[in-house]
Image (cartoon, rainbow, N blue to C red):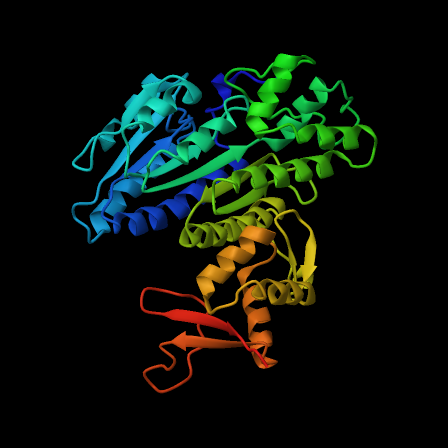
Length: 415
């Protein structure tokens, strides 16, 4: 049974902390970069909550507003503008009180008391030529009507990005109910006690419920996955992974880059949620991938390992993927080499990394990709050109990160 969310804000838990760290580490980079376009930013927290937990920990609204103020103070674009809007169904009055101190020279934060799916179109309809960022962290899944994402793609925004907290396991469980499939004996789908919904999905075996799931998934491809689960061809974990992979493919019909990060508390345990980021610019994908990689390491060390890591368990030649699977250097080398073949012309490193991760996901840490590129340079499969090529002391540069005045170009060698 879904919980009542009135107790949700009593104490901030570990997985909420990871979600907010992901947002807090990405937003400064996003705001600073987009402010330089000269076009205004419209930031919407679509399920805002109270803004602050009862234990004193900050929620996403205050985190975003603190970043807004810091970025507007630091930016060289003194005409930069960041409009902030917060949608909240149950706690709008408390949210207003908690964020009132941010009504300052940087602008008034606006609050809409209502449902995201009923109000978001009205908020966005006059934001042509804005850079729009939606943080969509709902209670449950019912509000995630995919048609809204499709509609926003054709709304004349300068840019459009979303960061979505998606309970994909909750979707699979509800899909089992619709198709009258028993999931109670499956570890991944049983006892989803943390699924909290502001309006319970109330999935039953009927056509209306089937249509709700189709609208969330943007299709009925989930039925085949549930049938495979029912027949024992896959388990609950595999069903969730297959569904999430197809859901990302649906997003890629409208977005150039889509990344996701499962959030789990113990190694091998089912994820609680899956954070999905979608955008249309390589820099957004690259920066979010770096942040997801860092949060994955925090999740493993700080939470799964209780803040401890054994050097005896560390091997730099292997990495665990976002799905807790192991991949070694040889496998990464083969995939990097294969991906280079799709580029007929020179490609900048950031473009290549974004394209590679968009296809393969958070396969490994960035260092393993860089090591693979270095090996391919050694065997003359590629040439690497860095600008500037030399340090002030005349030494050859070896950087693996592109910045404002620093580029790295990959070129396949044709023998």
